[in-house]
Length: 127
Image 1 (cartoon, rainbow, N blue to C red):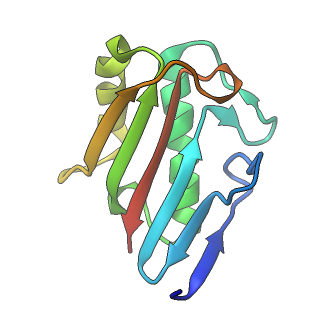
Image 2 (image 1 turned 135 degrees about the horizontal axis):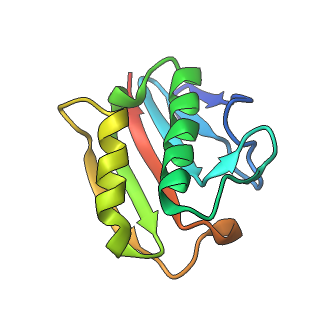
Image 3 (image 1 turned 180 degrees about the horizontal axis):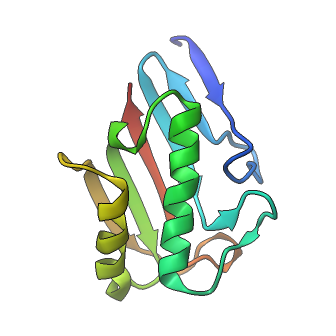
């Protein structure tokens, strides 16, 4: 396998399982799923959906920075939600974190997410 580097930062929630916050292989970084945990407390930010989306983007921002990049280096973003009717909120919040050209994206409704989260996101970035 190509040279593999583990990316970790205290500015995003610590991994709570058998995974890394991100893995860099050559110039590609694979971002693990982030849920709306506050890094300092490892507790859910709020029950409010918009607050959860903001926290997830803040967590992803911290990991992209630790990898040596930014949110605009994400080329593929996967969004998992427990209720797709919240998709307009995701779009609104996402516009605060990305500039055009936007990444490729998938939005998928799922029945449940870790710790009762309403949203989780992962992605791929290229440096």
